[in-house]
Image 1 (cartoon, one colour):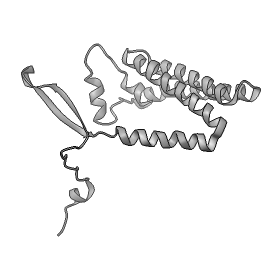
Image 2: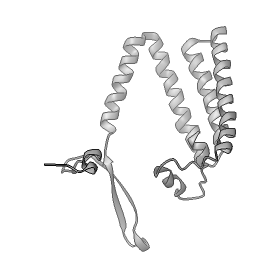
Image 3: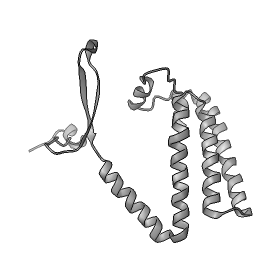
Image 4: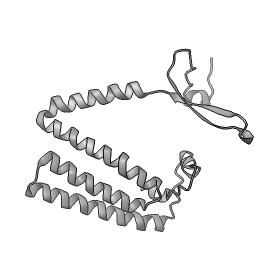
Length: 175
């Protein structure tokens, strides 16, 4: 039996069976008369929880006391991203500035939590912040020089279709 090129390259989607845990999305149909449901894919939450648990366990086993501070630092980083950074982007704030501020916060909190206050930590903080600021300035110039649009793939179209008064700078998101 000979397969076509499309059949060899494209993965065959798994058929959904009774008992499968899946993700679906709903949206108003044509003329807002009925809801349209769209299959998004399998629910991967359980696998992600197992993977995160193994990751944290390995950090604790290998890192011991340093592993505990590393996890605390990771909690601060994730909290900053989900509690401050993403909401600032969705509210239309300058992504370049938000990225630099959150990055500086993450650098400061992570290095101080993990290494404590010392000259070595201060040097690392200054070096990292310098790198972030230079990358931000370069991104502004490169985006203009290369005329980057921000439309990297079809998923970015969904960002332009968000409901409400949300205006996201897709060029900055690429950065």
